[in-house]
Image (cartoon, rainbow, N blue to C red):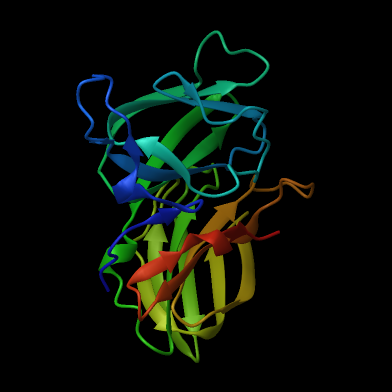
Length: 246
């Protein structure tokens, strides 16, 4: 399925226009834009995030909190820096990424105990077929543990199994819409599962979270992002439906 234009917060990314600075030029200048959402998956960090000096988080982004949806950003090579919100003198994680015009991206802050990283992935919705009766799902392993986890995604008795280390992000896989059971195990202190109901033509990111061995609010758990629904007729994804589960 191809997307003809990406709607973010009511703005069409491929049509963000600004007046030219030259008063003698009456033609508008098209500014290249991308869509970025950011989520904090680090249990012990209240994060502040900046993109090439522009503040993405006007307040602290606490554990499992996110930017509220996709933000329109300038395309090109940008620097994403994450800070401890109580001390913005030095970033706890920083790196460059090339954001392509008209594309969606997700940025995840991962880690614990003063060891953090930013993981940025392209949300390639335009490559998903949006078939009837199907949904699209991927995962990010945000459990800060040195072991390799076994991750299973099962629908109607069929199971997709993979091994993934910390900070791994899978590609989107096509599954049957309806109930899907996700489990993550490492044969030791990581062992949890969750069943979620996937909408037809919906796009989801499963968040594997928490501190191994903890029994508190930061215990190992599974949440998910619902990015929106692929529209079979307009060839777009309706991101206004975006949400992150509890």
